[in-house]
Image 1 (cartoon, one colour):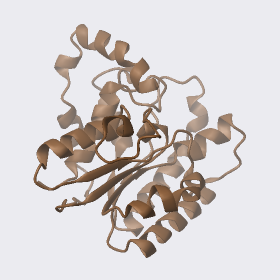
Image 2: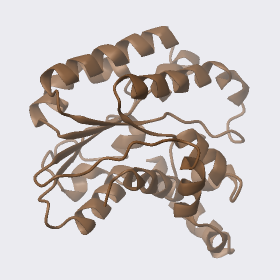
Image 3: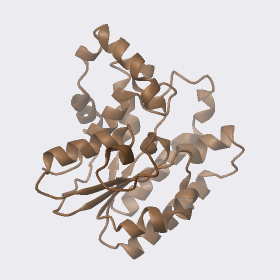
Length: 253
């Protein structure tokens, strides 16, 4: 996985002193300052579900389906966030799952939603989806548009709210880090419209929005783009930690 392969680069960069100049919580705070992020409060016995594509998947063992299990959580932000939540809330008996699958677009989430979401009856669902809905139009011959992405996303969340009306939703904005991929000019401005859809959907469903693009934009002011992601999309260890801190920041203490 990209997360694992980038570990050597992370350590090398940290070794030359870059890490000492960084404060991930400060990056999160700076990027969040202008947004009115809704906070969520965790309750005792809450079930928390992480959903999305490869960024969430992060190499998880798909044969291991039990909550709070190392192999089932992968090696990315879902694992780091779960570790933090369990450490801070030992009295709450939280059950935390990762059901991200690499390569997924919104319609593929929908195809597996009964099993990988609704049957788990989550009280809190975190979802990051949208990169592949655009990226695969450049690389895989996918013919979806931003309108398809929006309509598919709305249908998915309508279905979720109908089955789980009290669910608390956290939407992570899809992001892309410039300065790495040679074809990055092809991402803009089209991908920006996918990000705008994610923001609009968060508002429509009164979900908690995590503005990851602005956080990565802030992060690259303090360390080179490849410090945070080796390919512009998949996070390094530092990038995964950034996402995890952003997630934990929206939880009320």
